[in-house]
Image (cartoon, rainbow, N blue to C red; front, side, top):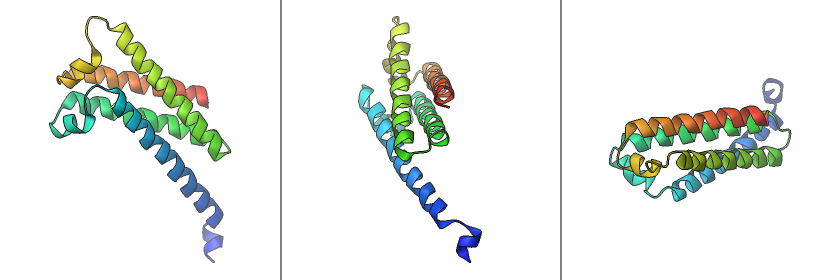
Length: 137
């Protein structure tokens, strides 16, 4: 009876994709945290709004990329690989943003609580994610 209502194979397939791609997302966020000169968690606990906004952009950005990777790949491995490729593109965009703003250091401004720079950084993360997710699909 349960199989008539819900395909167990599909449920297991969905759970497997969720676990693997959620794991990839967590690893990506950990890598992002490692490349910033400040500790995201400490700054968040201090109430640094600029870090929170930037962190939001990274999480949503990576999630958009993972969604496209899942939606456009028939294999779990393919989805994971495209998710990682999308993350690498997001990292490249992050470094380009740093390069294009030579008058100030983006990370230093965010660490010091510059909300405007945090918003721009989050916007760039989201823009890169939308472009990347479109390119993946």
